[in-house]
Length: 348
Ligand code: SAH
Image 1 (cartoon, rainbow, N blue to C red):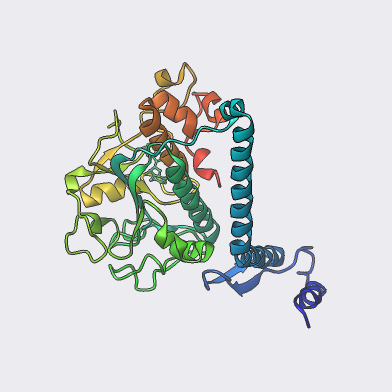
Image 2: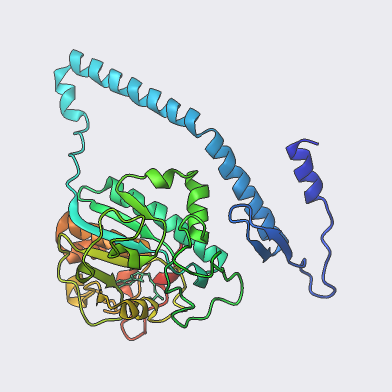
C-alpha cells in the first residue's frame, strides 16, 4: 500500500462515538517529534501527523530549493550588472547593500529551564519563538554579541514550588539534576527536529547543554567557555520595581523561556530570587508611549521582549523599541483593566 492509500485507509476507519456525546474519544499516540505519549482528539492527532509529514517533505527538498534560490539570485545580479553597464543611471535605482552589522556587546540568555511547566503545545510555541528570536538577531543592524540558550538546572519549575499543568506535564529524563541535557528536554527535542540539528550551528547562538542558568557563572561547567560574574547577570521580569534605563555592554540579560498563558505568576522573579540574581523590568512607562497606555508591569512574551531589546540596541530609544516590539493593538488598551494575561497568550 502506498502512502496515499494507507492514509486514505486510515481516514476511512469509522470513528467510535461516545454514546450521546457526539464526539470521537481521544486517542493516545506517541508524539512524532518528542516521542512522548500524548492524548489528544483524533483530528488533532491527524493534524499533527500531517504537519510532521509536511515538514519532513519540506526538509527533504530544502537543498534543492536553496540551490534554485541561489541560482535565481545569481542570475538577477548578473542582469543588474549588465543593465548598469548599458545604462549607468540605472545604478541609482539598485538596492544599496546592507551595512555590516555592528554587534552590541552584551549577551541575552533564554532560560529554558521550565519545560516541566508547559503543555506540549506551549513547548511547541516556545520553540517557534526561539526560531523567530534567532532570525531577529541575525537580521539586526545591532545584534547581541551572543544569545545563549540554557536548559534545566537544579531549579526546575516544580523545585520552585509550581504545579505542572494537569495535562501533558513533562518530566526531565534525570529528574532535573544538573545532568539533564538541553537536547533531551521537550523544547530541545523540538529544536533538534525542526532545525535538523542546525540550531547548534546558528550564528551568535550558544547552547549550554548542561547545568542550567547557574552554569553561566560556574567556571567548572563543561559547556561554558566564558563564565561571567554573577553580578553582571540581570533576570528580566515584569515583577519588580527596578526598571532598566539602558542596556549596558558587558552585562548578561536573562529572559525566562516559558509560554504559560500567565498561569505561573512571579515564576521568574522567584527563580531570580532563589539564585540571588538582580532583576529588572522593561521601562514600559505610559509617558514613553506618546500618551498611549499600557501597564508598567505588563507581562510580555519571550519574542516581544527580545524584539524590544533589539529595538533598543538599534535605536537607543525605548519608545521606538517598544513600538517595534509590540503590535499596535497593544498600545490602545484600557488602563483600568488589569492587563497581564493577553500578551503571554500570543503564539508565533
Ligand atoms: N509567568 C511568567 C511569565 C513569563 S513571560 C512569570 O511570571 O515569570 C516570559 C519572560 O519574558 C519572562 O520570564 C521575562 O523574562 C520576560 N518578560 C515578560 N514581560 C516582561 C517585562 N515587562 N519586563 C521584563 N521582562 C519581561
